[in-house]
Length: 209
Image (cartoon, rainbow, N blue to C red):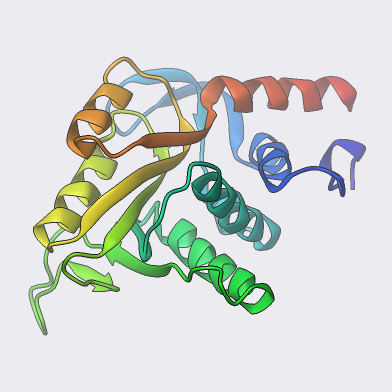
């Protein structure tokens, strides 16, 4: 394992997550985004959130962020499929914390379909769904904010209260954050990292190889 890839045992979950994102999820080049715009870099967070250690770090880092800002919630959810591994890892991390500290709250998970099922119950939300519950909406990358806004709307349509919105990486596009904050309607929007954070760490790792 290269020195730049070795885990820093004294680093926070957030710092370790940034190092892993920069190493396996960030690429420089010429890319076309889902929005149709072009970019000189690409971040595929799923490479990290579906990674065994990356998933663990993601769950704990998001929980630390929520605790830092005193966000109380009963569940965490987001639009499939970018949010799927984040939701599962945060829920699992909350269960681990509850094993250590019984007073630590459990955060259950829910997934928002892009469209209602055409069969069975016809539900759009899978997993936790309770009217009046405070929930946190999560996403992997915020560019235009469309997927995050979609999940916010679905949660509210189901009667849940959006307590906060969290993305792993904010690309800092002009329309992204304002659109999400408008949809959040007063609920705080947090980003663990900006794209510049991940780029800077990626370059640093390249330089020390």
